[in-house]
Amino acid sequence: MRILVGQGSCGIASGAKKTAAAFAEQIRAAEMDVPVDVTGCIGLCYLEPIVDIYDDNGEMTRYTKVTPDTAKLIFDAHVVGGTPYTPAMIPADGQAFLDKQTRVVMKNCGIINPERIEDYIASGGYRALSKAIRNMTADEICDVVLGSDLRGRGGGGFPTGKKWVQVKRQSEPVKYVVCNADEGDPGAFMDRSILEADPHSVLEGMIIAAKAIDARKGYIYARTEYPLAITRLQIAITQAKERGLLGDDILGSGFDFDIEIYQGAGAFVCGEETALMRSIEGRRGMPRPRPPFPAHKGLWEKPTILNNVETLCNVPQIMLHGGDWYASVGTATSKGTKVFAMSGDVNNIGLVEVPMGTPLRTLIYDIGGGIPKKRKFKGVQLGGPSGGCIPEHLLDTPVDYEEIAKVGAIMGSGGVIVMDENTCMVDIARFFMEFTQDESCGKCTPCRVGTRRILEILTRICEGKGKPEDIDTLRYLCDQINENSLCGLGKGAPNPVKSTLEHFLDEYEAHIYEKRCPAKVCKSLIRFEIIDGPCTGCGLCARNCPVNAISGERRQTHVIDPDICIKCGICEQLCPYDAIEIK
Image 1: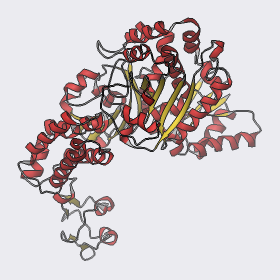
Image 2 (image 1 turned 45 degrees about the vertical axis):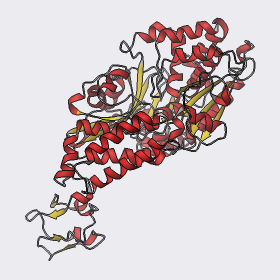
Image 3 (image 1 turned 90 degrees about the vertical axis):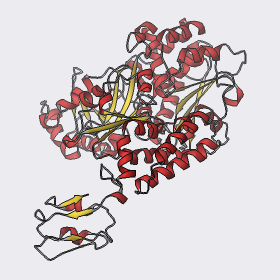
Image 4 (image 1 turned 60 degrees about the vertical axis):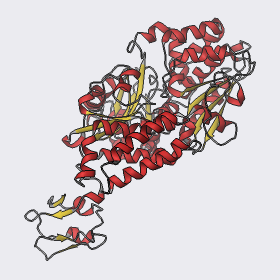
């Protein structure tokens, strides 16, 4: 028997370490020999902590939301008594969440111990490396990747095989392989979870890429806010070197390749490839004009392959099963699967891997479980701060690079933020513009100045001070920034504004012409009132109002003074009679 406790960041945040300790304590007390192992996130973030118990025949029983108290009940019933503890077993929606996915990149996530190379090898790990390094030429490796039609999963969607061939053809003897693990989009946690759950798959992909272009050095650029991912990557690198899978004379082939982890300081702009490379070089992370492209002059002006975590994790599977196998999944122009981090106003928050071409509606409703509290869907932000907001009538749009672009969004790295009817789309546009404006490196004027002007206008609109001409001004600024900015951060910064103007123009008009926020979010455009009837005069709201804006006699309807009220919403949250109305 073996007990696996999910200990990715989401599991640990939910108390997984205490759950694991509870199992270990029970095992010691019972004087049993049952290992309690670590695994990464399987994607069911909303059901953490997750515990899998394998019996001696390899059959697995999965438990969810396992607290230390629940661990005691599971231990007594299952580990000691041999009967699964039914009340804590994975619910139907959780199993459906997993069953409706197609896992290629995430095939090991939540299944193996990421800190044991033996688990990765037992699951087929490093077989692709052995095949590529011992039996294939560089041309043959590139041909397989070309045949797969794998496109970069970092957001740009450039064909991976073409990028590798461009670097391979360079006569420069020094070349580099760089893994972009600088995942900075709000709501994105795909790369972090993969690194925490299956770090060896990234290493294997990088080594195969190095063999394809004859590179001897690689870097993984990971933001320092990912301490667990970095720790497990370092463990994986050490284990791979001990096994002769990394470093000098890999697998006795005479090929040398080493990998170093470089920790970034968390600047969003360093997700842009030229800024990332400048950062590794010890310089300020600022983009530079292209061309020249990194394939010709990249890290230290040498030809460089730069792929993100998910792209590289696909490579071992492609090498094992062939390019045609991979290309058989997905759409005509977007092959394979895509990992999405689903969050926001959706029931089943977590990681989802589905074939390219899967409709957004399937993601949000069939896998994500729909909107909580029976609220209506309003929009979904796809592609992070450089993405766009997609309304309900476009939910049947298939998720591939071209189709998503047609509706005003981008694939991006895979963040999916779902929004319900209580979301103000003007405020959402303001939020993303505030993020990108703050993260702008300031190198080029269109991004540095243009994003600030847009943010000022959006802030004014949310404060009820919008002007009729603001809409045309926003559109003009969006076009200028999009066309003239130096890098992808600037070019994509206007996308949330452009898409909300396109699909939710009525909300902008309500803010500007009617001085009203339809979603009742923008504080300057709302007021709190106590309804006569439901209010019993209990005084709970008055006692908890931080500015003493509520008055009234006991057992009589109370009153909120609008001149004093700061619209914090505490009264609405606390009222047991739903007597507070937002107008």
